[in-house]
Length: 261
Image (cartoon, rainbow, N blue to C red; front, side):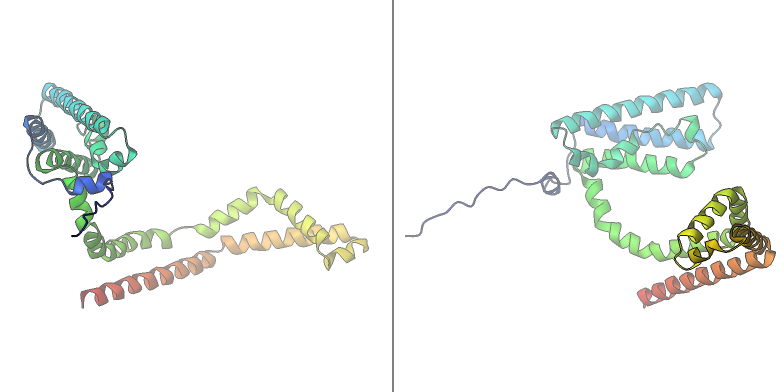
């Protein structure tokens, strides 16, 4: 006769519990959130590409703020059900984005941000209709693959855009201006280091020691400043930057080629 043993009960974490929820269902409130998300997308499209009068634009802004308020109330209600756990906010970060009013005039010039916010609203609605944390699990499932697929291409594109700007920078002239603005501090620092140096400190009893140090320091600073202001130094720095950028670009391209083989 075998004895039955009961395994100890181990409570599931919030993310594990959410992962076991079925991807179905949704009550009338959930479908209402989906409808509001679709309405916000339609309103933004109308405002962006359709003929909108100032009165209609004000109505769209008011409607968008109202939709954001409903999303905020829904988020706070769900967070309260999770006993105000911070993990809930981490899993539903797109809810916070969805509560930003995209029709606000301050965001009209940032079209990419507006698109991201609208997608976040659709993610909120999908969670409520298809299943809790559906968007979070969907993003996590494909996140690594998406990053690996586009990371190299994005890196090369960014390098191509930034390379010309970097090689045209007047870095040496900026350094020369900084040296000129801080000459007194540099002189004091050089005198201090020479005095504390065990080799040069022995010569401080020589005649005209201070005059020699002052003249040498003045000459060194003047020569360094002239070298930094010389256009050939800027060309040297630009060539160094160009070579390093090309090396990075070739390394990324080679890695992408090996990845696609």
